[in-house]
Image 1 (cartoon, rainbow, N blue to C red):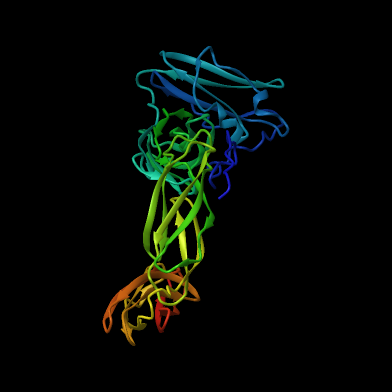
Image 2 (image 1 turned 135 degrees about the vertical axis):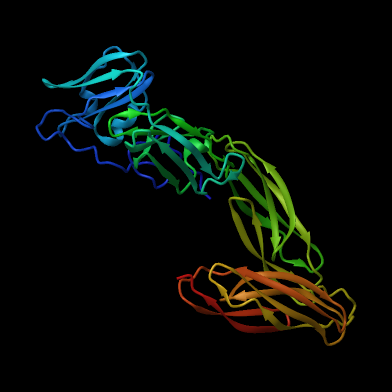
Length: 432
């Protein structure tokens, strides 16, 4: 895993695969001069309302070159909207009753708006509910997806846009179309964005076609754990069966310096499907350490090679290790592990868990022990270990998550021991 590059801010391209979408308001003024956008009708709003004003600008003119006369009104939010829409944008908050004239000018052309503030005016639109999934009491990784859902309401049934803003720098990340008196919008993020990683909320602003601008609603996201990267530095393999296998593991915090999520992860040593050792590791930004993980190997009577995996929540490393048979038993007889497949849970649909039950018997003279592996397409997808007494038998169940194939396929399951193997073909239905 490489250290992630984090953006300190974002612009019109969005983040996490989300771009600025919605009503196209980026057209230039056709006459070569600025042109007022939005509803031409007179607007009357209630006190303490905010209104958004926009003008199209000619090609080659920077939206910031437009001069605004806001009648000494206090400014409103969404000043960053120009960088997304390509239009000149201002907002103003009207606290007191009366009639106001607002103007925008450039290169000898002036457009104006008249806004009346009265008790019988139109109320601002509002966000009824705003929620983030996963929710704030959950923990996710930096590559996990996040969705924010907003429900907007306007008593005049004039909803037009929902503007999504990140709560760190208050830059616009997306604009979605909404309409009518109530509508929902979802901001889908393929990966957790930087502002959630840094502990800031997501903000949603509803905007009406007549320019009325609702208050921003905020929603906190889940905690984002600081990602760790793993590497197996060295092992003591090959080891003699029954001796302790050990691996030296490098653990590094590869998150960003501003991340505020948990910085503790469990690092596990896994053999087959069994966690045989685990350590809790806490690291601050750029810190790294090495730890030792190990376990007592099984007393097999034949040389075996099998995979071990070191994993944490954000990374995993697999190594093949060799375990040599223990010849120190003084010639005592040992049996062999024979295997037969007793059944499966097939057929299954692609993406579901496919399991097989096998009977393992000690044949020959003496007890037998060793790994039992499930092999699909030449890959070991499940493993466990057995120790069967002389003349006895053991039942094991092994399985794996199938690939979400689109069409029906036939899969060959192979169950093997160091001494024997058995196979069967099963059906996996396609998801298409």
